[in-house]
View (tube, rainbow, N blue to C red):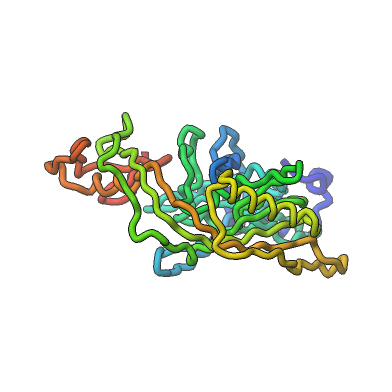
Length: 353
């Protein structure tokens, strides 16, 4: 669809020249975007994005650059994407905390890149070009994109004490939402609470976890390498930082008092290993020369770390040769494929369906 300037023949010289260049370079490339809906798990706030049936086809020029990075736990090909369009793609510009559009860009000999945009580039009216910039979804994050709500996990993802703190939201006759750190919804207006568990500070207090008895009970219809419902508990300690936004001194004291009462009464399954104090943090904005109402409570908390489904046992069992008998289970097949949304992973590589 032409712009109003094009329809009236009022394109500037620079706009017409750039449009011609884009059309020559892109050859009218089409990028298909699919709409995903945000779905946080109620148990621990872990965020998944569930595909919907809504599709969007955008025409423009897609450029990407790949930077190979290596760390102790992954080797990452980080792809930076820039999508240039002669028309504004309003769906990509709209800010919605509960949905987003992810494009699929085919790569020869590899799975398609999942393209998500986090930034809209500078707009120059005389050029009348729209630039959308972001990164391809990292390989480690693809597990958070699922095709159906039926594929959502039934239980919590985290193993630490985070679910305990997400449940502590009612005090002094009011309810305030609590979110995991790094997963606070966009532009949220206070009051709210953020719970951060320092991953390097979780420590075991018990000599060894209590597991079993093995093999537990097999979960029906869980495949040739079955899942086992196997209880385990481990006495642990977490270093928890609770950030309170929009709380005055009285409200913060009421919240801390609620936590103490819940711990003493057993309403919340944790115990204090320190004497927490409310401290004020500085969150300025120079444009209004003011500080946000931000407070921090640091808690050393003792709790029982528990798990219901031993998911890792599926991987162990599936790696065994097929002639090995499994106590309480079914022999695991040593050959098989892992089917994903658009392709199949085999020992030889990617096979597109």
